[in-house]
Structures are given as structure tokens and as C-alpha cells.
Image 1 (cartoon, each protein chain N blue to C red):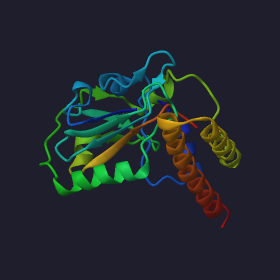
Image 2: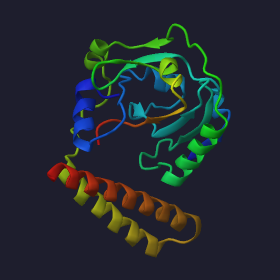
Image 3: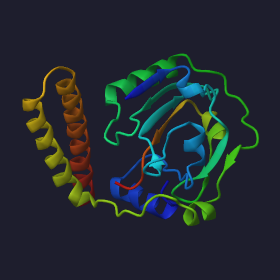
Length: 47
Length: 169
């Protein structure tokens, strides 16, 4: 387990990105952040 | 990393109340240094981002696909971010952009079938008994780690049962 606080692997600021969600709608990180903080969970795929 | 069609099936199967995004080639994953080169998949990771886009916490299981943060670690991180909320910023033009068509077409993830909801119960039960057996053979830090996994398995199993009951009612 690697846990970092504040400077995770040199990334302090999230890059801007737009990725499609499961309904094929574009998800824009910074637009979504206007509504509040969020948690991004990365996983390997179907389980 | 899965295409949107797989993600939609997953959202429906598990009644997920949040969106599942596709990063088919791992563009964002690589940018965050969370790419597992050996297996060609993402490391299991949780990133807490405040309103300004600042990464407040990152937890990665590295190459251990079963290493996830327990609920209380996540809830605590969220509480902290909720209290000291940053200022919203304009992100501007996305540096990483993937269209739905690309995501459906370009996935580099190895093609492995997903477990069905019915299969998940026995899967976690088997995992639970494995942790019980290991607990008896281990000591110290290793034993504590196995106990952590056991708690996770119990959390997951309870969630699967709840979902199964919701689906059948």
C-alpha cells in the first residue's frame, strides 16, 4: 500500500480531462468539481 | 479501462449510484503514474480531489490488486476535504480527452469476463475462509494485513448481499 498526502507521486494538481461515462456522456473533471470535491477510484476493470 | 458498454452493465448489475468512466488506453492513469505495466491495467487506487482540483490524498495498492483502503480511511479523508474546501477553478480545455467512440473501440484491457452477481457471493466467501486459514498461520504485521483484508471482504460481501436482495425485491 502506498498512501500519500499532498504530493502523490509528484502530482499536486489533477490534469484536466474529459472521459466518457457509462451512458456515453462526457465527464469533465473541472466542470464536475464546481459542485464540490470528489473521489476518483481507479480499478482494473470488470470484476 | 473497460468500454462504456461494459461499464453500463456493471452499473446496472451493482446498482451503482455514481458514474463509471472509461480510460481505454490508460491516458489519465499513466499521467498519474498508476499504470501497472506488467498486466496492462490500472493499479487499484483512490484519489481524493478538492474543489480546486488539488490532489489531497492518494492511496494506491500498487501491483497488489486486492489492496484497497478501508471505508473509514476514505470517510476521514472526505471529511477533511469537505471542511477545508478549495476554490473552484476553471480547468479550461481538457489535456486528456477521449470520446465515447474511442473508448468503445480502443480498450487495451485484457479481455476477461466479469463475475456475475450470483458468483460474487461464493467468491467472497471463499476469500473470507482463505483469510481465516492464513490468520492462524501468520503473526505480527502479516497477520494484521490479513485481518485488514478480512474486514474488506466482509464489507464487500455485505454490499453484494444487499444488492442481491434489492434486485430480487
